[in-house]
Length: 193
Image 1: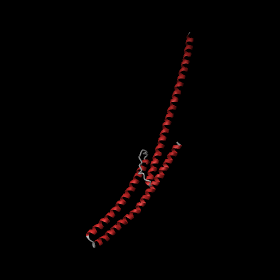
Image 2 (image 1 turned 90 degrees about the vertical axis):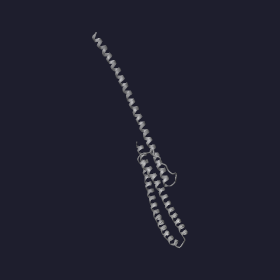
Image 3 (image 1 turned 180 degrees about the vertical axis):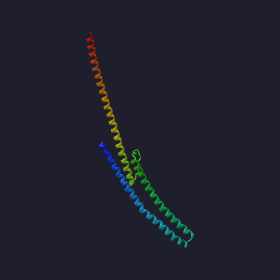
């Protein structure tokens, strides 16, 4: 039981360490995104400034040139927005998968399929660590169940041995009583004669 408790403690400590690492990674991701956000805002603001400058210049240019400039600016803005959305979605999905795996393990669901994307980044390593934690916990659970079954079998065998011994004692007692009854019966017949 002590070894099982130690195994559970070790597995729990690994899980806690992984959870702490996850929290730290999530914090770093939030900080990184917070650093990107001002850049995106600045780029957006800069795009707005550039659009105004181009509008002033476009009054001097023909309609064709103006239309081309607007398309380029809009495309650049949309591209930067798309890139930032894609980065945000990638980070959100990755953290969501990690959170789902951690929550599932915390609820005791050791059958949860932890699927990594095969990447070697922090999220991929966290998912691999969670899969290892899940496998360790599942192995510990199987060992505990096997020990419990072995204990139950030993208890049943012990009970059966006690039943067998009681039957032997009862059989011996019946034989002894039968002998005593026979002696008393013989003595009683001899007294009556």
